[in-house]
Image (cartoon, rainbow, N blue to C red):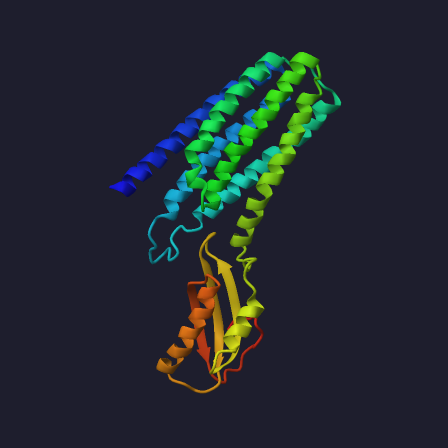
Length: 299
């Protein structure tokens, strides 16, 4: 019952956050057009991406929790990574568009209504701040929800910058500050999104996780009594938490399966120390194959 209550509470929080961001987006688009503020329209575009981000993130989390089947042996564990990739890609795409448009308006600044910018930026800070608080807990330990959280958090920060720009426009008639803020927001979005984008690509490409040293693992396994060689090693991530490992292990003697189990328990200990709990080991004796640590040939 407690788990169901938590799930319903989380669903409600995400639903409220989506509604808040739809309201902010609509208000800022209208206000941006009326006031002539590029910074407001930039913030509106970011807020609109938040809506997609939240929908993607929540849907992916639901999928990731589905059970494995014979046709989907890993289930949908990479659904959250896919959502993180889509969200970060979308943010980078929006940022590039804002960078181009902001630069164009910076070259030829236009008159902006500071009052509208101030009021709408203030509203955005308030509602985005509430949204950040609503999904803060879900962002802990999840690349997917963290990408959605970053959408909202950077929106709140950019709205603070837009508010400051609104005051500069109203009281000092510094109209170039508005497109300059738009450019700054764009650069910041790229900076905040790049890490998640890069990490999600690495997982999709099955790259070796940065914290894993394959040569070190091979040396530790080869040092186990009865092991002659560890080769054909691959380490990759199924999602942001689970590491997978496979290797061929050459034994010094032609031993039985029950004897190899003793060796295997020592290999498990080495792997557990590296936070690897899912692995596939192929024992071999006097097999003529490629003995390189990393072997891309089919065996």
